[in-house]
Length: 369
Image 1 (cartoon, rainbow, N blue to C red):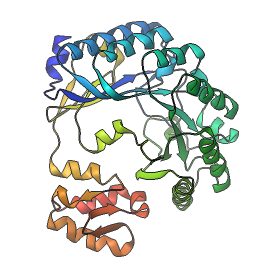
Image 2 (spheres, one colour):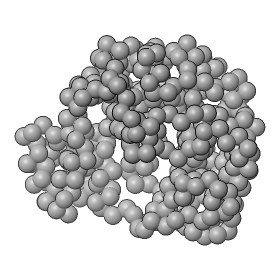
Image 3 (cartoon, rainbow, N blue to C red):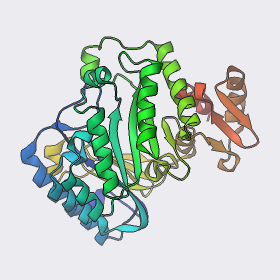
């Protein structure tokens, strides 16, 4: 424990915290996050160790402005195991902190929601992806639209109104019409936040080993992304980041902390932290984590180029106050006629077309720094 805390240096007193829950009921074919299907026998020991590390952080003066439990699937833990982790994390929560738990609709139960309510969880991120049965089956999703609606009802009955739904774009057989049905479902649930991510085939996933049928081509993916952006805007969801949309005041404070290069602590295999100007991660190895392995230090972070790269993911982009170098201004002037960026007295920001090529555009803007 002490070795872990020593390696994960953390001078800031107020920061975010990410807890990775590396368990799920089944591995989705597109997922490259570290997770172990089933592994029931390891969950109790993991919950105990997570709680210990969170309590140790609290005893050393850490205070969470935001807390995010992701995975994997946090909701597959037994309610008492999740309660143990949330109770420990609660020792360091600041008043008005944002407390998010990711849930899979199929594992949302009244008992789970009672734990969320009792521990002050005020935001739930629900993995929807699509309400179209054919699309969900290809993605390996276990629950249908009715089960998602049931999960939403239970979450709201627990008093949690800040609901975020994940939607996937560019999935096999998806059309603008089917996507509209999914987005309308999200709107009709009263979701305050929607994350709409383009499907990327990641190395090591089932989709990488065998390309699924019906995968949209690059131009179709582009059209689906732009269609989603415009549909959500008309429905009252303002885009504030490449893949994130929110009703006013419901932007994810935890993710904004990442994109503003704020400090955050981390617990769990595969989790990344950034504290005291140092980036570090816990190896994606549950056995090593349970054995007490310290985090791996990745090196210093937070220089101008890194901060600029993160800010350019936001619709607000780089501001004049960020101190934009002349080389970046010149690069923006070259990209602007192509409709990829906007450059003016406010700063530099990517357009939606630019977001579709974000890696290339951001790389060009920062290349000569």
